[in-house]
Amino acid sequence: MKIINFSEQHSIINQYMAEVRDKEYQRNRLLFRNNIERIGEFEAFELSKTLDYHSVKVETPLGVSTLDVPSEEVVLATIFRAGLPFHQGFLRVFDHAGNAFVSAYREYRDAAHEEVDIHVEYLATPSLEGKVLVIADPMLATGGSMELGYKAFLTKGTPRQVHVCCVIATPEGIDHIRKTFPENTTVWCAAIDPGMNEHKYIVPGFGDAGDLCYGEKI
Image (cartoon, rainbow, N blue to C red):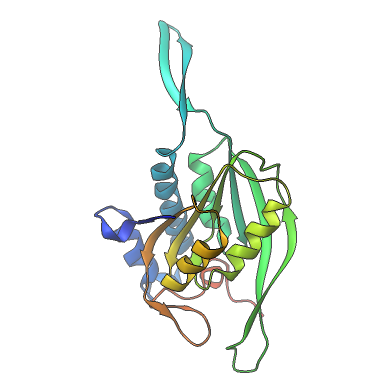
């Protein structure tokens, strides 16, 4: 499995990360969502370099231009609800891609919110057979929701290549992907944080991505 961690290199992504982590900056949901989208756009651009390409001829008003364009079919997948703005960033780059959606939510088994179950209820996706599957979800914490989402998508075909894209990952989440996803999977992330607290939130992280994008839930 290959891991691309953008915090190990100099790029504008680090500026966006500094802003989304800032608890004062987070007060403005619009700015927070916009930066999550922009991180998605930059990850998508870098991922686009790994696709297979073929040459096409395009007729212009003054002649013919030969260009290399992607030859693979891409399906962008995300997990409701936190993944929506991140997914939109990818869609701005891969505007011809198919789109897949699955719902996954946490359900705590104890009053202290330390024992967590994850449930999947909704699935909508095109066929994935032989395609490049890009799963965009901002937080890769335990990896449990990513695994369940992936298994739900697999009911609609086996992709040729899988990319797991997130804003922040943990070593535990990456290890879980290594154990449950195909060997040739690539994980893309803007940062890898040390771990999680007792409630399974990434630390230092930036909090609950869904709440910061769309407001608190009951």
